[in-house]
Picture 1 (tube, helix red, strand yellow):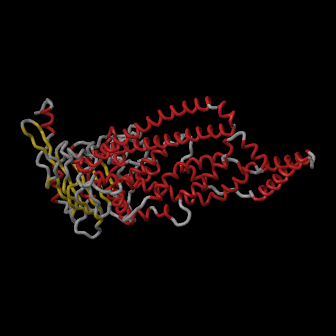
Picture 2 (cartoon, rainbow, N blue to C red):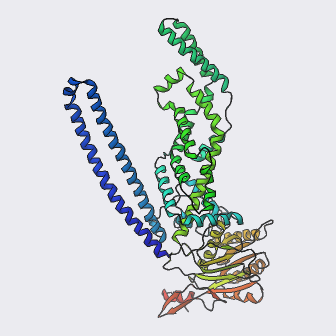
Length: 613
């Protein structure tokens, strides 16, 4: 299916959703009017029929009143269901409009979720536009929960690939790519649950941290003692009311009960807060887990295996969480400031549920950890699957450890460039020709090509589809020195910052015990110094790294460096060039063999009216 057909498919789906929205809106308005009308009629009927019906039979009036109330609540329930359906269709409408925005790289209409990633000395994160607005993560991010986003970013930022992991991830993404309805359903449910989140609520990570803390002990003896006193007090109260016992005996039992409760008060400390927060989180996630455990995954073995925790025989997630939610609701009875003291002065309610919660912590932590982590992984995989769905011309790379070529790509492009203006290139690396010097004019496409190869390698290492008609590659670590900037805070000039970055590159090339070789990308090497020193430094650097175990691409304006191909056996020259027609400069951004035959700096100066000798 082509990209245009995908767009047409989504647009038709949007039109169907709009029709459903109009229908639900009309039904919602109708039921709203009926509710108001019925309420007025019911009030009038209850008032007008009171005297004549009561004169006949008081119970008959109660029956009529009950029927009026039941009918009102039936209408209310129906109205709520229509409103919920309307909300779901509104979310689904927004999601599908987002799909079109992602197809067109319409950044203004692709929701952006703020995400802070400490890139530090990361080998490639700063140079490839992976995070931030208009970035790869911005394009991929269909996720609801930050934990899923963090997981996806960790996949993209992984410094050394793991073959078995990425191949399994390819299978999962490929199977999920066909399940658009499933992905949309998960997002709709996720948006609905997210609306219930209060900024003061615990995060799931905080809940899991609390559950992982060692369980408190020593509940049994105080609970037995309080239970005995509770029974004693209840019996004493009954006997007192019947006139068989004095008030003094009951007061003594209550005093002992209160003292024992106070002595063991630390055991129930934090019970209400923990139970309340866990109940809210469980309430949010149980609907998602119910969707996951009931969805049929025919002919999707990899996804079925991933979701096996939701389909365990015995206690399914929704049933288990309903029981947990009920228990947490009872444990958080402190919400009712009238009922809570009355209950606890009668029976050791808080002590009992604190003991139950401590006993449940290990099981709850184990199950919730697995279910939540599986869900976060599914959300991150769905983001990559949707990327594949919207780009049917993208492909999964073949990881070939024994092929004749180290890297071979057909129609390789950059996923963040508008398809209308994107130019794709073929590129191949053969053993013995592992270092490439790319020369070319300003704006001809050197930097973009370096980023194109690098970002597709990052996608390949993450198990994601790549922007290529075909890509076969061995596994590489990735290192970039492309967007080097000065640092006033550290007192570093641009040149010195670049020198430090290249020093880091050499360390990575020489790093011991690395399973995979390094694929490095250096843009405009030593641009921050004069021509003579830049040439001398660049030539020495190229000769040095050509001897190392790695593959690399280095771009430069210095055409003289192209002569090094005769000295360095594994160095190849590539270039990008421009053409000038009718006084206008144009670029075709096509990669060509050999050194660049010309430069365009003086031409650009002249075109802009600057003096040129």
